[in-house]
Image 1 (cartoon, rainbow, N blue to C red):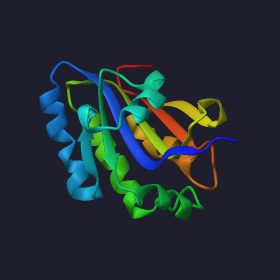
Image 2 (cartoon, one colour):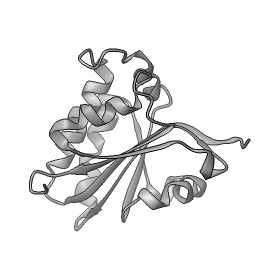
Image 3 (tube, helix red, strand yellow):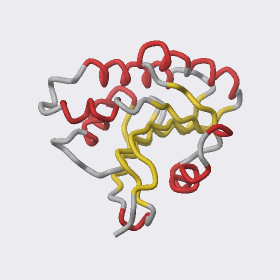
Amino acid sequence: MSYVSFDCTQFISFDSDNEADVAASLKEFEVTNHFKVLPKDKILPKKIAHLRHFLHSSVFEMVNQEFIGEFDEWLVREKVPVEILSFSRNIQLFMQNKHVQNATVILVRYAHDEKNEDRIFVGEFHKEHILEGLYHASCFENAGNIVVLKMKSNDES
């Protein structure tokens, strides 16, 4: 059995032809969700290494140690906790940025030192169905200790 390498954090990763413009749009997560948004050069290297198979050219960590706990309160799919609803709306707004391609949202309850001990859920969701994807991180669905949501835009089928 391995130890936990890191826990209780969120990431958003994407490709972009204008990262500065996209990075500015992430400020909304700081304002409405109380996240501290860290660019790639401020993220611990062990986190980047652990998640590298799911990351695109740009990656930001959205730090709020309390946020993942909101998923423990999400027992009924139709009764979405306010913080998760706000987060989902911000993801949808973020996805509207014309400079964002191949966005992936990663929710980490905890990550083991030994990656093979992680239970990882990976799913693809249209931005309109982000709540369906996020529900996989709830304690009721409990799809894994790491939940990876590959976001599809409207022009993708």
